[in-house]
Length: 86
View 1 (tube, rainbow, N blue to C red):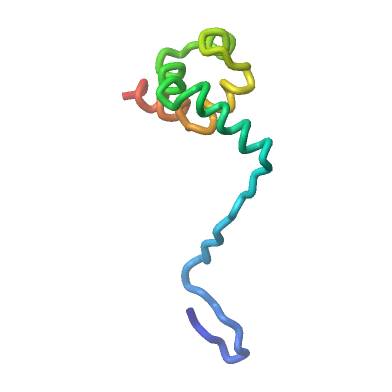
View 2: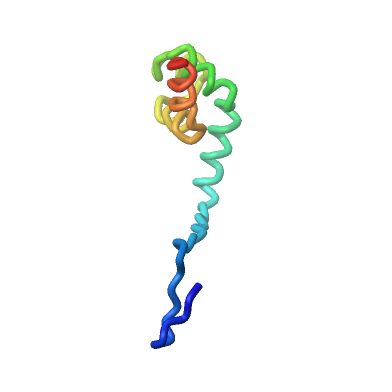
């Protein structure tokens, strides 16, 4: 951090700003329901075995939107493609 002659502060490294996200009770409940219905292990299995979203929804009893949400939130699509590329 440097102080210029004008009194302005300058930083040699970028500032990191922490973002806080507040969920409504409904959003939190939806997130929790998805986590309970489709665990991270189940999401990993769906991605590793390349199970289609409709088939996964039927197999795990969730909606297609919930399956997509869990696959996105857990990042398993990227992890599975990395593992397959090895």
